[in-house]
Length: 366
Image (cartoon, rainbow, N blue to C red; front, side, top):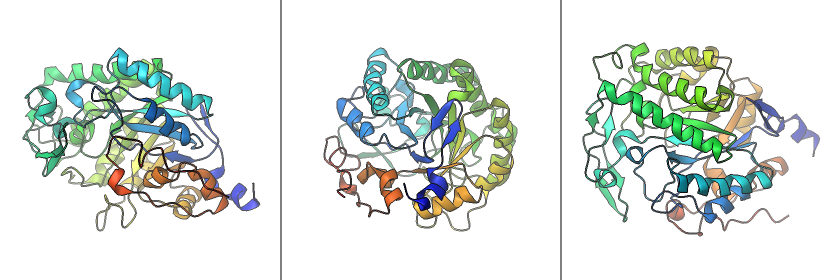
C-alpha cells in the first residue's frame, strides 16, 4: 500500500459498535429487485454482495419488515422464516469472503401501492399522497394513492414489527441493522412537517414528530443492542414529495435525542451538487446533526474518493457511503486506493431482475 493511501483517511480503520471496519468506504443501500416475488433473497444476491465484500461495511438494500411495509417488485423481506433462511446464505457467504454486512430495515409507508396490500390503503402519519407513480409487481407503474392515517393504537404493532425484523436479521447472522429513516418512507414521513400534519402526540411540534422514530430506535436497540443498530436520514431530500419547515432545527433535535442510545452510527444523505437528491441552497442539517451527537456519522450523497476523503479529514464524517460507484465497480476500495478508472454503470439494468448489470461487472484488470 502506497504512502498516499496510508495517509488517506478513507483507508484508516474505524470501529462502529463492536464491528471493526478495515476502511471507511461503506456500500450504501440500493434497491435492485433481485429477490423472489415473495421477498426471499437469492443466490444472485449472495454473489452480488460477496463481490463487494472489500467495503468497510455493506448495508443491504431496503428489506421489508412486514407485508404492510413492502411495495417494490422482487425486493427482499425479513419478516418470515423463508426470508430469514435466504439471508442466512447471503450473510454466511459475505462473512466467508471477509466482509461485514448490516441489514437495512424498511417500511415504505405511503409509497406502497394497494396492489401489494390486497387492495388496502397504505399507511402514513397523515392522509397526504406522494406525487408520481410507483412500480407494479408485474411491471409498469401506477399513480400513488392517498394513504390512510395511522391510528395511535396501531403504532405499537409497527414498532414491534421493526423489533421482530431486527431479531430475525441478527438470527440470520447480520453484523447489525440499519433503520431506514430516509427518502420519504414511514419513519421519515413522521419526522418531516410536510408529510406529518397530525394534531396528536405524534405530530405538530418537533419533539412529537420524533416520537415514533425514537420509539422504533428504542425497540430495535433493546432487541439487538444499540451497538448493532444504525439509522439513515435524508434531512433535506425532496424525494417522494418530502419537505420540512426547518430541517436544521428538526434534525439537530433528533441527533441530540439519538445520542443517548449509543448507536453504532447515524447515516446521513447530505447530497453534493448534481446528486439526484440535491436541492438548491440546502440548509446545513447534516452539520447540525454532527454538532449534536457523539455517535459515529456516515455521510452519503454523490461523494467521490476525493470529496469523501476531505469530508472525513475535516471531521464532517467518520466514513462515507457510496452507492452508484459500487454498482459497476465491485472492487471500489481497491480502485480508489490504486487510482484506477471507474467503470460506468448501465442504468437500464438498475431495476431489472437478472444477472445482467448486477453480477457481471468484472473487477479491474491490472
